[in-house]
Length: 453
Ligand code: JFZ
Image 1: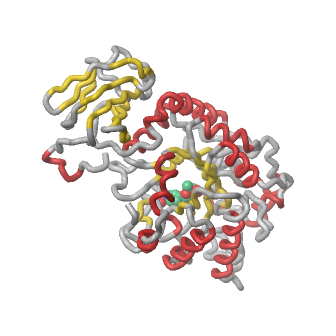
Image 2: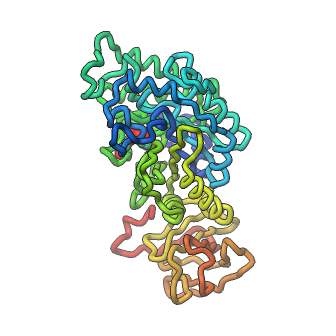
Image 3: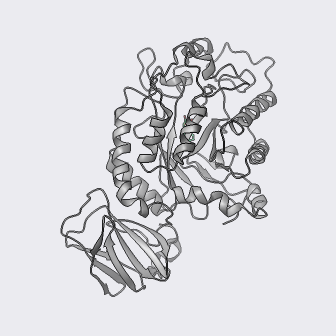
């Protein structure tokens, strides 16, 4: 898969000998941590009695620049411990961390020589990204940056917000803003070691064009040739779905947001990003937390469709993760400790919809290992895998590899006898080794919709 979007970047990539290896680590990783952290963590979603804000608070609560700047004096996350954050990500089974080097509010979490609106202008005065880069390096976690193209702080960024009546646009020059942003990105790609992903966002305003997207993509790759760049660098995203349109667009992967595409995104790399509750940035009033079960099953669902899962944390202003997030990370980690092999380095399921759960797969010597993720344990104690011709080699519980399960063929199906009770109600994984590559019997009605479920 040399060209992900049939795009200009893709055409260039065909000639590059390192194309496949550039994406390899990311495709194998499957699971990363998103972190939204900045000045907006201080008001924690609340402003003058309204409570439904987060990282957008400057705009959603219509806070003037002067007023917002005052958060600089309050940003002092003395509990911040980069190694503790990285450990929580790693223990949860995550392979990379994507943190907001700069969100739409324009505040930089690092020591930027090109800006006074950064962490060095706060009492904290520590380069948060440097500390994270060091901790990630030690732990073998890839550090990635989310960097907003839209910027509500820089005087040259246009347009202003509609409600910002008294912020003049006089003398503002967008190209100068683009230079500023590139200088920032150069800092980020020079001073923090090898960066895994540049995750752009806020590309949707009219001032940002396809041509600028292509140029920025090429610029980033010139600074770090092996870096991976998301689709939001360009204008190819369809509507609010975060998918990439057909056409001449750059970007290495699609970014569905808060959703899992029904059939994956066949033919392109993609990553679903998702919150644990209803906000990206910390919101102290938001207690609509997804259960650990839902989050684990989302990870499995995404892997079974060939995508990555970028699960968000909104740290508090003191530098700690919300307790609810810590608990969920730990629960996911417990499951991954036992079942990680069914996620990392796997491919999308060869099966269409299955009533009882999901499937991931991996090549093994002489055949294929199918990981059967059982969300709903069959009451009759038999797991039915229909529409497959292959000969079975063996089946076991991933949690107890010494247990051999009995397999029989029933017409087009392989049927596996299960223990009466599921050892893990969230998702017990069974691995079934078969000879050769999956040889599927396509249901005639759905023959052409089968590829990527
Ligand atoms: C963007 C940001 O505005 C938001 O603050 C957060 O960082 C999120 C990860 O990304 O929000 C978007 C971007 C795209 C869509 C929706 C929200 N979209 O395409 O549906």
